[in-house]
Length: 444
Ligand code: FAD
Ligand code: UQ1
Image 1 (tube, helix red, strand yellow):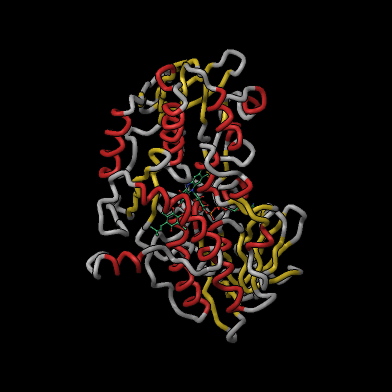
Image 2: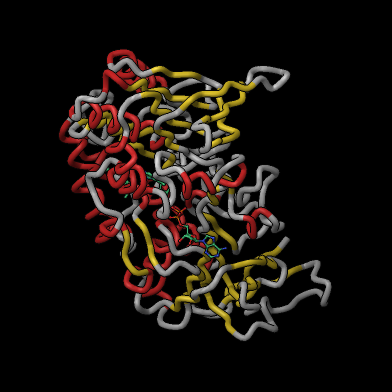
């Protein structure tokens, strides 16, 4: 267990009572590079965090490790898959979104050594830190499904909005579809944006109706879950929608194999003790892959038994290492993993990390706020917003469970602007203040 001791306004060290090298030592003693704040991952959460601290701590004191040339606004990929936006519009060079006063270490973190306050990169560089924020997002495990990812290459009717390499295949596959089974899957693991596997289904339904191909197509949603959505209020509305649009929903079905040569998709029945499988013919297959925290994090000592960064769900501080915090999809925080959640967490993280940096305690508490704009057609959206308890926490004083054109435009036109210009600049902590104002102070 470590304690933090402020040395001066800008310098801190970590004193470890049970260090092998003696009773106390400065962290990352042997590293060539050392930062006051090191952020691993420059996605939604990492970039917002770096922006919040880069100006405050000054040039040379904050670094972000991320190997990706591009930063993608992944929420746009649902619209890319439906042919309503381009992949190009969803991405910007990483260099252009990171704060100019922060160092970008364009490499992959491969090893965490929290007792020495050191992160090692794929090129063997050891980077020391006083404070670490882990923001590595989720890993897509397509290869856990037999036949994938090869099927993407040989069968253009197999697609996935979850990956930049395959999202551009979705709309051409819909255009080429001439009838038969159009199958949409939801895996048997936690995923980011739990609404996205069905949003593309409603947009596909809309497209197929307009193109006059819907009556020749069976739309099938095979989900590993036992419900259509985890929050009752929105689940009830979605059940009405699938019924009215003649969409078949099969619960507790998990995709285990794709056979592109025979155009077969094999699902296991999760409730069958003997692992009974069902084989479907497909003409179109949208795959949402199994996901996990990234391997280097899973293999570290920083995770809970499920492999996620083990943080206090309210303060976002690591349960064992007080100089480590987490944000976004790679953490153990039990809320639906979204950019909206990362935005709300970023405000809490800023307050708590600042407090700890000044020798105080992490006291601000995250309420689990998350949001999922459920696109239900090319001009309709249910804006789901809820907290840890799955209780609706809606920003606007109207029934957000209703499909609305306004929410569609908010998702399609307003959110990208909010993301690039406000969230990534470190100035968006979620809609809590707006919600309170719009509810005349009566909301949580
Ligand atoms: P990410 O933004 O994924 O960033 C993780 C970063 O870590 C990446 O840049 C990656 O390169 C880096 N990284 C990974 N491994 C390493 C390593 N070893 N070393 C260094 N860096 C590493 N959210 C919403 O709020 N609303 C929506 O409507 C919505 N729709 C979505 C639709 C789709 C199809 C998808 C895919 C996602 C959607 N999301 C939505 C979810 C949202 O994109 C994520 O929840 C959000 O990006 C999480 O932010 P993050 O910082 O945790 O992870
Ligand atoms: C949000 O804050 C956010 O992060 C920037 C999203 O991700 C793109 C969202 O989809 C949503 C809905 C929110 C919540 C914001 C408002 C104004 C309701």
